[in-house]
Picture 1 (cartoon, rainbow, N blue to C red):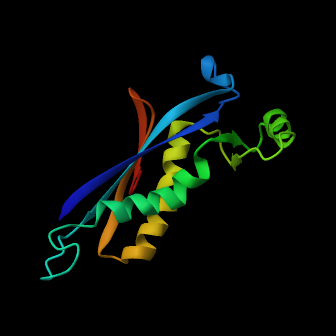
Picture 2 (cartoon, one colour; picture 1 turned 120 degrees about the vertical axis):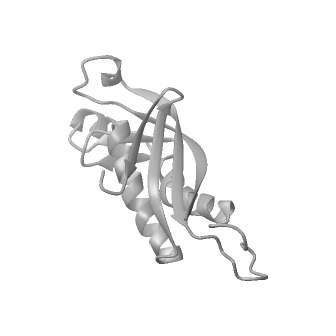
Length: 149
């Protein structure tokens, strides 16, 4: 088995309302999203992805459609953070994504893993599996979500 990883980036705002430090304030990040898939090399002679686990551009397209297009330039908000949810609702055309938990790096990684796992399985069946999602909140801080995590 071989693993491959594809990285995408997007910009989004969030806040962690009960955080004891700076993250309780409205702010944004340039997030990095890495998805790692595992599978066997395609060995069929003449196939477009012969010698690959999967075409990087196909893996990117799935992540783009499932996570990045939805979260990019949005405000990622905890549904219970009513003051912010209500405020954002007053902004015409504003992109807001609500979550059942505070939008920490850990929760966003777990949510992205769940969404991407279903999309990878729908596209590839059991030929490849999503092994890990890494959500980088900054270049120096990230959360990993994977099987059994």
